[in-house]
Length: 273
Image 1 (cartoon, rainbow, N blue to C red):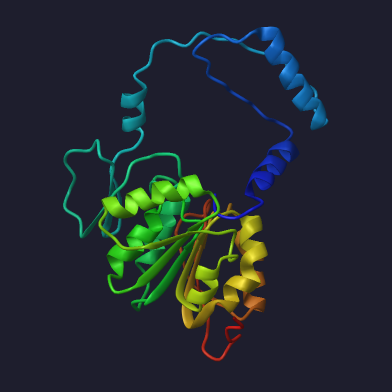
Image 2 (image 1 turned 135 degrees about the vertical axis):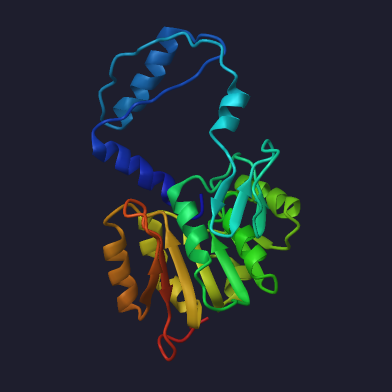
């Protein structure tokens, strides 16, 4: 979720990898011939040969219990992400109430966790914040808890994900402006700029595509948090932002999923509207 083009990005990565495993669950067994025919047609459109099927009958599973066991409370510094099924949690400065659902972002993934940690490294209190591709709204909620006087805008290209985010905003008692937007293509985002803090937890290609516009919508002295990167993808992205005048200020400790915080120096690249 977040910006247009991401589905094509991960689909391209899968096809380029040369290996793809597709698993599907059926309550009622499908007609094998019809299913094979449909998948074979789809595979031919992609120029791929269809591998053989493997059918298995699954044992009864307590899916609710299994799901809950995979989503415990997560502590990230002074922030604690608490799912509703967790009754008792250790004391924390800020508690974020959030369940796994249709939108990305529970704090369990390294990218989201890295953003939560880097967010707490800010040495000033931003007054205008935007979370591009907010998903579940977790990072926007964290920003609202940490910076109570800030005006925060959360955007999503997926309106269904934004419904989830709005629910989570209300549940956590925070006031956040939510908008459906493709990247920066929204009057609310254009009119709200420039921002003191921009958060983009997306993917490498969208982050590259948005770099020039993102840099132009950050105030001098403002900070930019970038995540959704694999190991090695941070280097070319940093080079792109250095050319735009931004400098690296902090990063997460995870080498496999780097999260970056950049600063826009004063007197560099004024906002162009």
